[in-house]
Image (cartoon, rainbow over all chains, first blue to last red; front, side, top):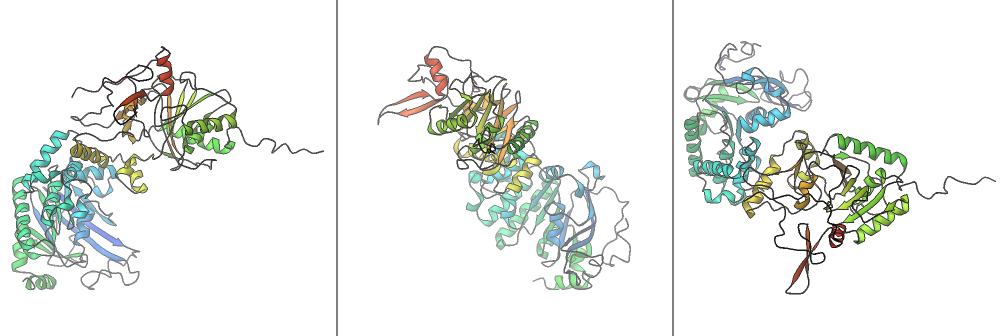
Length: 297
Length: 295
């Protein structure tokens, strides 16, 4: 499939080559449409029309024709305003939602030969718990507040077939120490924690099985600035230590600048610009990216 | 003169009409075929309220034949009110012989216990189940729990056991300990004490679990593996009645009831009334005892 055809992709989006190898995650033509799409829904929406709502059926094109490659150890940023489809994108990749169309290949599954969106629920769950990690903006989405912090981490380890309480607790303490959560608080429920601590517990849970791929969805939004800095520091530190690939979703360009190597800019459910983060921030090409960068405080 | 014979008999044999019995039997066959899987069934109206043993009655009355010998116990006892009333009802509706003797019975209905005596391949035991969904403790929604069973997604159940161990230093489940049946489905053994749980595994008799209020039934067929959920380092334990003898029969090694006599003293008696009678008479029946793993 030639997603890099010049007519469909604006000049600001770096062309993709399907012959490239060495990728960890390959996404091609990923779309999610809510409501009743018609054949023209995708065509009538997007940044050129300034909307993602189909004028004929009111179907919402949350994201459409998303294509990119992610390489091992790479940190990819996804930036855009609210409603641009960036959260939907990672939720599709983490199987939280079902894609309307598209293909996703993941090197860790059948050596990238299979479209992972078509896996059975059982294999999807296995993939989620063993090969991927997700940190949500709201800790209540990622953690079970009726379980203790240790129990939340244990859930991931149990899913991976570790049924030894001693070893589970050892691993959980190790992870909590790593993410700077006091190990003493391991058996308390996350609702007794501060927001920053909850976020760090979520990160411990996400990396519990040392997955090769991590999704971070607005991890620092809603935290105060000093805590934000520490969480970002932690993520950068973990990334260097574990060499995990990440997709970082944020509306905050400062976060993107600090964490990511490469960035996709999204608007109205489409990628409008992609490239090296530094390049995008220094020399934005697309008018929307220019607006984003110029509104950076 | 025309005489109306159609209504000369007030009730059908076994109270439930034949087509409904047939439906329940079909569901029972399905439950036997998929050990531990909860099969929805009709749960027809009975002359007692749902949740008072109707599930057990449905299974009993659809299985019972005129030649069956029926025994019913409630918390191990043949003499408790619930058992007596249901026994009278089954006897009136079927004319079957009833018994207290566990060995003699061909069909046993029970609430909260499995008899101590080893049941044979000629016997069927029917458990009254209040809540058939073991995952209800960790997941509220039926649609979700059914999906969890379908995909064998039991991590939440395991986390609940982990949490219990971390909070209390032991898995605090006295009754209804979760078990895995035939290496696949996790099910509730109904609220039987942990003492009885190992006796479900590889037993010669057929176990039928039926929940009338929840309209679900599940089975453990004869010689099916039933494993209580346990961790590699935290094992399943049954109740220990160390140095305790039955005050009525002098026997030990059975599930005991604790009876407070006054403010200062207490005594223990065997919970299984028929078993206690036999021990008292000096004919202790064969039992399968579980030895706790060394700490």
